Image (cartoon, rainbow, N blue to C red):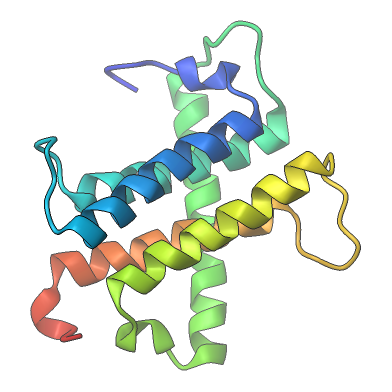
Length: 162
């Protein structure tokens, strides 16, 4: 927020989804090609995915603003609220899935994020209507957690041999 403020407040949730898609698609491209022509690796893109998904959750709750100014303390409070909710969900799912993520490849997290984004776009195209599926918010929460798992594996590769 120090660099950009809360300019993201003008984005509709569908634009947040597209921003996350751009980052996930770049990660997949780098994973596939094995090189990056821009001097930023996949780590910063996964961080961006976490941030945009949390901001997307805020936008789902508040709706986009005509004027992007928001009190930085309020923005941080809402951001942390969403991150902690994702962390709680992660803990619950880790229990049920016996921490299967530890044996997964980073590229699988990328693919799962892209799949969740395609599902989210379909829900957005259906104006938020689902028959039995979870909503956009649940997809954003899962995206946060997949990106966090990837970041853990990037930061501590010695603990997670693929």
